[in-house]
Length: 368
Ligand code: MG
Image (cartoon, rainbow, N blue to C red; front, side, top):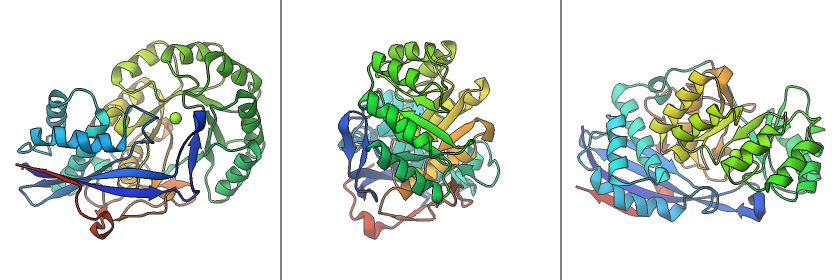
């Protein structure tokens, strides 16, 4: 089987809440997502999706996905999409770095492999554990009471895990964490995610001020070294995200005992193939994981579901259903949250069927 064409479509994803705000005053109101279509000479077509969290979160941006596909695409025409590791090596030799550009192609090729073998992607990634898995709800940065009100509302929808967007003024962040924790019962999980927004001394103050609470601290500072220092001065459980973008960083973090949980985002690692490597390494060394992506719609949510559902449950800290945050659904068969939980499709591949009336014409096409 050979790749004959790669196409990309743009879909805008407005947020149900109007906007999503996090550290340093960053916010997004409409996500610019790219759907990647990989066509083959066997008549089988696969779909992937890449949606950066704006241009200021990771070194990734929406137009960069499409520019990168124009650069990378010609090197992949004629390659076998079902030889996933081989294909990834080809992508790495043709374009150094830029993992997010590769993510949509890799995802689409897993979709093809699933369709060719008649198996859902979660089976190919290791096997399905149980009926479903637990999600967290990200709570956009607002005043403390507004965040507590949102948590109460999402709790009523069945979520039991919450990730507060902090990383703002440290004193207000302390109030945010206290206000929300007060609404939760024992067993419900609270993560304070600063998204690199605190300086080291600010992170130390916040961690000290909430040390009596049941709360996780996620990615407090910009650099790995700053985060490690904060980690060594707090007893609170610790999550690393932005700094853990490769197997090398994962091994370094483990060696330094720098985290209890890591956040594995599919496009941060460059697709399902590389994210699965990271997932399996974490599972082998006993590091729990949040499995998700930077952002996305129906296809990203489907890919997350397959990776999360094939992760040993005791090591799956939590996961995300991004398609329920946005007003637009553009695929049939996408997973739908029930009582704060999600399940991967049982259909072959990712199990999603895009609605091309919504996607419009292709923005770009690369063919042999
Ligand atoms: Mg995070």
